[in-house]
Length: 462
Image (cartoon, rainbow, N blue to C red; front, top):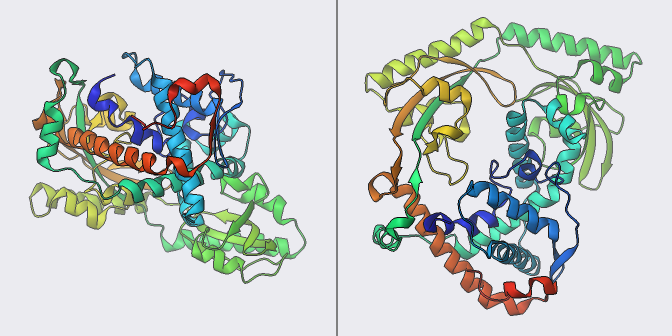
């Protein structure tokens, strides 16, 4: 395996599953169940205090690493290295438990929502994702929640241990000089792409029509019709609509404030007035309270956007594009101040590489819509406004900027400083994690299947 890519392997394993797009199948990426067609005879192979490692944990992680190698040679002890990293994860979880390190429920929910939105985008729709797993979205989230919570705790522990580690330019150069010339990787074409997105704002008339329709539904429920039946018929929330609007139990601060505030004013069985949130307009029925948790069902209607709404978004982007091309504002500043895509706006509009967090994107990994858009563009050019639909189905327009286009080349400090610096940083973080492991390995009980004795799990992870 190429050396300076290998240095980041442990950090990647520590966050396995948080970065979507690293596995060979949707099942492996999402972290629910096992890859289709893969049967693993499961058993506990390692215990770290109350934490366990299953054989399937190791084999799925191994399959992911094989897939990422894309045919390149793999070290013969790769399974041991992966298991060492998993054991380090479990040690961090065990220490987090004794040190009372926790993550907020809202953080877990946000990560679940982020990951689910990504996979809905990849597979095409919520319905297709539910059909793939034969489970509703709510059940998929419930199945995934414990794993995501563990990963966020591991991430928090890792940040505590190595979060302040940094590298200097001199250390980056020294790191690069240690890589044998015949081990330098060859990078395919990479691009930097920026975008500015403007959502089509719903006009007042569409809002009024939606509210009127929802008031009619509310009156029908008050007249005796079933909330659940009408939710199945009218709700535009694909995750809960088919379940009669049922959302299940949530704790305080897990749902958007407007929804939660309205729900908590109700008594079990009561229905709310119409509530507006960022998702649209809701009718909410409280089902039950349990401690600081509560369960509800709802009917969601989303005001439709028309051609004039989309045109207004396009007009705003056209004016913004003219200013950028006239050098009266930079693309990065325009994206930060105007883009409705908060993920990229904080990065100057640049799309992030999910693998390393950088801005350089392999051409063959681009979203097809972007690939075919930039295929004939010159570096520095910006498209006119283009139609776009967000992950949650909202109509929008966007402009796309081709910042750079780097042809295939062997790694060098000039073109690949960002990647090399990240690899050097990962190596330094790995060293800090190794030192922490050596210091804390004696504070936990560890038992491993004799089959993995040669992996030396209580040694430093290297």
